[in-house]
Amino acid sequence: MAAEEMGVAVELARGLESEIKRGEVKKIVQMVMGEGEGEEMRKNAAIVKDKMRAAMKEEGGEKGSSLRALDEFVAMIGSKREGQ
Image (cartoon, rainbow, N blue to C red; front, side, top):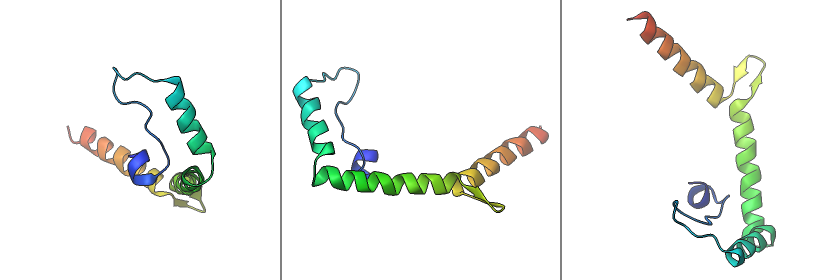
């Protein structure tokens, strides 16, 4: 998800049986730290960071979307327990 949809990650290995090679790690680090695609990934990561902070923010009685969702989840669990 992070790699394909958000453009903020690079897949180095997949699965438990994957073999990670030094040369591949070096290539990916150089790509991410360099210009072009790496620069775009860093910009995307900053955007995602800001969105995540906003989702967790609580300011002036207003809660971010993640806090609201967590509150709703806890309320739902509480109401199900009371209904037993």
